[in-house]
Image 1 (cartoon, each protein chain N blue to C red):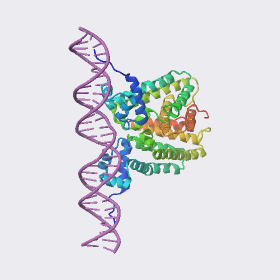
Image 2 (spheres, each protein chain N blue to C red):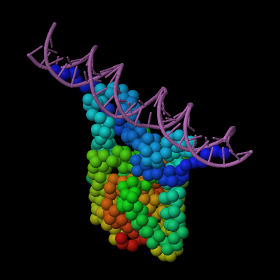
Image 3 (cartoon, each protein chain N blue to C red):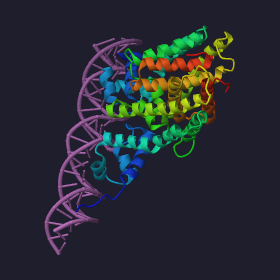
Image 4 (cartoon, each protein chain N blue to C red):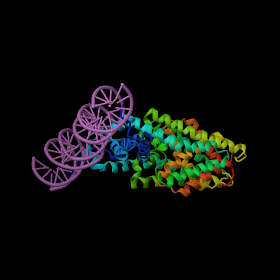
Length: 198
Length: 198
DNA sequence: AGAATGTTGGAACGGTCGTTTCAAGATAGC
DNA sequence: GCTATCTTGAAACGACCGTTCCAACATTCT
């Protein structure tokens, strides 16, 4: 009997993600969202609840639409080390050029903001960090099986090192870090794991 | 002939630093600062100018009071690798326990926030990143001269790797990362440079 | 003591914040 | 076509935002 929504929530969320991703939660007002999405406050609140819940929904959307596909590809890539190299290459591409250049990573950004004070948000950050580390761990374990790693390398801690490094790349890219330099740095870090010269 | 200030600007700045450091610029209101410092809006604006200028002053204060001494110690430590190890040990201590636990690093935080949009702020971030990298570079060059590094290690790129890693440590500490795990990870990263098993 | 100068307290500014409310509009079933 | 149900537009809410203004105050010099 009722009327039906005149918009697609996921499409709207994609727009909201951009705002929160680029500017952060604290610097993004409801008015910004109303203007960018084109729908009004009533529909916004009726669909997503308050700002905090909307931010959470956007964060989950970012994870499922941006992070999950990339980590899935990394996890299922059975080439070992080249999978890791490609992951970082495309990470740096995304961070330094194209539509989302200099936006950093929404997850990394959320670490530094006040939004991190919320328990639900922090749970997402932890979960996502673990997923990244696990994906790297899988690829590095494969690499080790293929004899691509240094003899004393431990895939677990190496994965954690690279996960922290990814946060560093994300942060510095937001401040305008040079893509070539980031690539050189990541290459050197991976070389430290393989034991070979960069 | 005039009256004189009834407060010490640097002492006030220390209080302001805490607020901006912990909560970020966007989430810290002038009222928060008035309440925390005890002085009123007039004195605040007469001394520091507007909020943006106050944030810049706080950022510079953070650099000179927190970052500069630590980097100076690292630069002048001529032990080589142990200097780097100690640097990260005390970094993780600061980030995970004591008064500033879970606050992250004000510089790292500024990367992710909207405050980074300001050119003056970004200049500080770049300058500070380079200072950190240079300090690590100096220590690693000493380490290399002492034969503490792997044969194929390059102190320059290795310094950049560790600088990015520090950002990762800062970010993850804010989300409550375990100190012991961070230490283990950093140790592994350094082991990648030395070529020895962690 | 009195004049000059910068400081301080506090009210007030217009604007924006997140959120709520409610009447008007649109759709589905009868 | 009528009713029930949800959506939509727009106005309005109180609270807070960063900032400015000004009178009262304290200090130093003449």
